[in-house]
Length: 345
Image: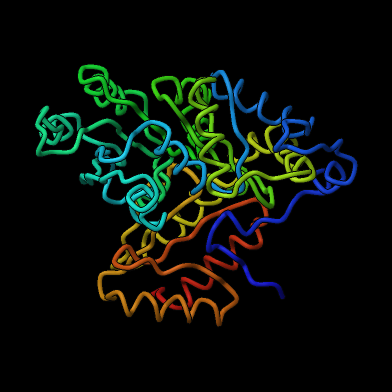
């Protein structure tokens, strides 16, 4: 029996319709701007996010780092959360590639606190870097897929406008936020200069992310994409799957949210369990036990795999599980049974 793979929503395989479109997609050389399928994907993506333009890149990390490089200059400082993907999991790219100094702050319910932002904005002093950028994340991965509301974001936006700062949103799972909050991705993205999103997280595409923003910002981002080796050729063969994802894959994300909630419901009464968030807000859930340290949760990851369930131990946050299209009701039940077998009373 195949394992129930809850390590990430990046493990999904393309749908049959994606495979079909990949086989028949009209192609061209995207570096010359000649790939009609890529051009169409970028147009559709920009429209969905309410921006002028978009750029197709292989990964979310490249989307985020080209955004940072576009919105800053060497020696600047950017403010971001200390548990954000850009800060934790993108190989220090902002500092290494663009000479941009990160200023991490603790996240508050998955967002930045406006008063804390104010306290760290640099004065106009030649001894200090210039504060130029604020980065947020929605949904927030390391806070268990929290969907960050417009009301949470608004105070940070006010501070940015007051001080003339740019704003970037790592919207890798922005469509999960759209489904959870009941507002469009364009409304979520509206306050930001640039927004990235992933096609390979939850939307079942094999590869690909988009960076969206003004025509001017995206033109500059294309220069940085070239610098990073992200200029691809007949890449419409992959972009075609992204068009299918945006057309057919967003509404069904609610199924993943529902199954994540069902798992939480089944685990909630286990003695000593802590769930983050509780209840779940999207497709991600952290499961932590009082009597287990980091090593204990790592051992638990191994024990779950022996029972046919693949999950991910993430430091002191416990076990992360992520629901996606390839986890059906049977997979949900197998995952729940495995946790109960190991920890149930």
